[in-house]
Image 1: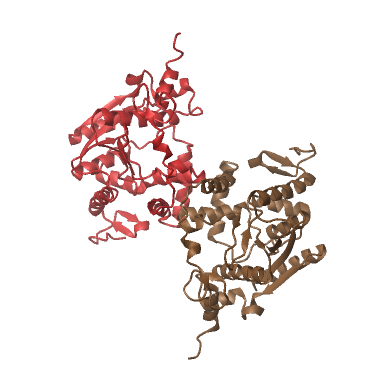
Image 2: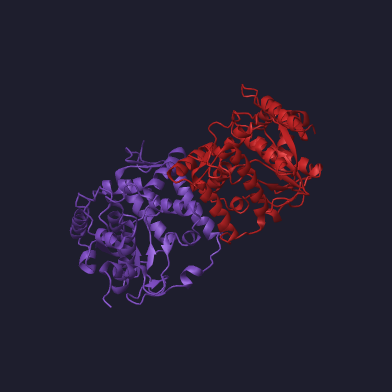
Length: 311
Length: 311
């Protein structure tokens, strides 16, 4: 297999694009494509301040790498979740993220959940009994809350996450299996800002997971190889396996599933009943918009974690 | 496992309904449920004349059995497709259908494609080069055309087919993977009549394939066990396998996927752009409604099969 651009030996072959590239041209191609997606979906401009949520994994570190190479103003945000899982998961991912940032002279914000709220994620999950014995529900809740809080408090225009096509297709697949209308109406490369909510963008949403792995490896980014120890057996991994089967049978199936969805929605397949955003009000404690009555779900979770309030 | 109704040994266990039944109560339950679906989706009434498309398989013969037991006026339509596949597929399915009808004193209409149009389905497919070497595309086209023609010419109010949940979920899955909007807007238990098109209904659309197999076996219906020899390797079988995996992991997943889709559509998730039916006009040859310019696809296929017309 030869590189389509220079005829040298190809490093990456993308069947769904009928495109093979050598290392040099792949490292050029992926940022160019990212730029194209940023413009196509009007994610942000060069004068905007971007906060990249970085986990120490291949996707988010590559995203930060690509955005800074493209000349965007992108700072990183690392959230310390306090997950050990026998492999020092959070500690190691924090170390790799710090090294990445300092090697490149980038600005990294670090927020530690335990320091901020008294307990790490797994303990918050245990004492609040949320998530059927797994901390993933509390973790997702806390990450969304904290990312939005920091973006708002520090005056960032936009929050960027490293979700790749496999992530997005798996979420879409899950929402489609149950026809979760309110989610189908909102999922996409850009979630516009609303009162108290930062704009959220996913510049990598059209890259396959293996393309991101190839980028991180060829670029020499040192990232955490392990998945989060709690991810094993998760529904999203199960959906990814199913989608990989479909992809193997028909190269491009995953991309088609995601892109045709975006096209169909843009062409007006769905009726936006406009109820989701209309019913939001600010949380009485943190001020973030919520559809829950009274406090937002995150603040209620924290209240539950703090135990009964003396009368 | 005991029958929920009488405590005797259960014959059929339906995990997704948390319901186990003995032979006697299963044979009572399935027609009762069918009646419920006929009413819920307003498929037809007792004064209407129903034409059941029967193939000799478990689903369509069971449907005919159930409808006549429920007291509906249902005649059968058998289409002779001329498929041999080394097992005399069409001949055997015709024989079983005739036996089923005569044993019960039911009225069976038989239309043979070769007698009617000069060639059996596999030959029509070969000479018209439709369907990438497989006759399935021509077969579907011919069946839809003939079922509608007979229903219209013989004055039936409604055409009933034996599609079960596995069939419907697989079609929905395929249409969802590519977000085929016009099909998503139309798929359902009832396709209303339109100018020149009979109403189409699927009374078995909420029964799993294995429930239909159980019904046919317990009722002692003699049906053709073989799948159509051309079905092997088909996309719909592949989608059924994927859905069976999801079902194994989460009993009820298939039913949820189909029912939530129907609910979401009824609740107004999709915008009906009303373009599909609006652009139909009668075929210049057979008079059936078509969206194709000039003749309908079936008549054009026949013209192609007849060869070049002398100038």
